[in-house]
Image (cartoon, rainbow, N blue to C red; front, side):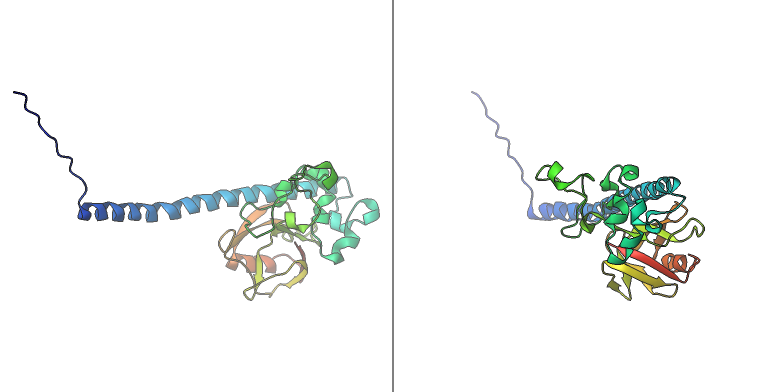
Length: 229
């Protein structure tokens, strides 16, 4: 006589199920912040590399233009001096298209504002496909330009993250004048109360809110004019 042995499958009890759910929740809570932190660091490094390339492009352009940045050269000579007053930022980068090679370096990968996205080329819209973005306005720029920066004042601000605030209010696009005692700070987004700035000597440094204020005081000038995109 054949004896059939029935194996009973034992399922999770309610207590065991709840224990598993709690354990998984704890693991997720521990891992997610670290993941976000790694992503934030990666985005910050990309931003630093972008600004290093921007600083190098300014220097390369100056070598062909009597050691002057585009903002200190007349439009008739290929610069943007007369365009400073209109507040547009992209024009100062557009004249350096040969040195920059791609407008993608003008966009911080951590900038998540609506309508903001990097351009793919310095070419015109007619030369691009329907889904490609030409470099024609400030929506493809997330770095300010220090319009008065000169090599003789190496601590002046040449370019940097544009997510600045004054007394807690984010600055608007256009030409911004900052005095050494202006209470300027970073927003909480992008690099979490920190930011990156390319100085006139081409170096790129990261600043928190406290060191940013001291950096403004160390520029060597009373007023810093920044073109904000």
